[in-house]
Length: 246
Image 1: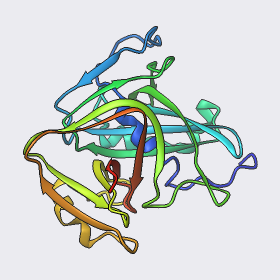
Image 2 (image 1 turned 180 degrees about the horizontal axis):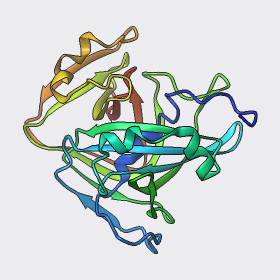
Image 3 (image 1 turned 60 degrees about the vertical axis):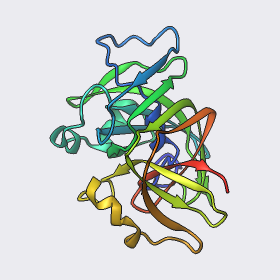
Image 4 (image 1 turned 90 degrees about the horizontal axis):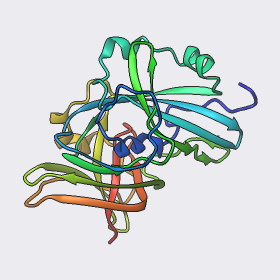
């Protein structure tokens, strides 16, 4: 495909988390915003969303446009399953397109700032989506993508908050670093549900030194990023953000 290696399902590990920068405030206009004002989104917990990732560029300098349904619709399964990656790539003039979803938020609220030039809305089939970011495709050992349990840096300015008394799900790395799950995925396992997350540790093939745990918050947990967020994914493509270093 134009000299580009076949892009795996784990394409754009960073992009999978960038949707967290999206405000759900939908607009009827397709015009791009003139200013990047911070937006606050509330009552997000267990909301469903999907993304279309459209890859452009020349290998290894690949960029992906990230289009997201959140705030416009809940990514109904019929229209989502009707999307065809090859047809969308042709429509968008992209090297490749990957469908990223469905996913479900585990945060309660977010304060975000979209990058200048982002925010236009278009339809993919019958699904409306908003352009929220353009990200560099990570290259690992000459192949686009990132291995599970590997850190990647996402450029964004936002605050994610998990509410008081909310149950959270965490990965703990070999050095004691803690990563909190911000969204779970039905990409690898379409049957994965919120209730199954409590016992997820028994399913994960955790590398040596890694552990999975769950706990209930006594107070709100807010993670603020002033420009960079560190994220990892497990093999089911659930996404976690760095909470603290050991």
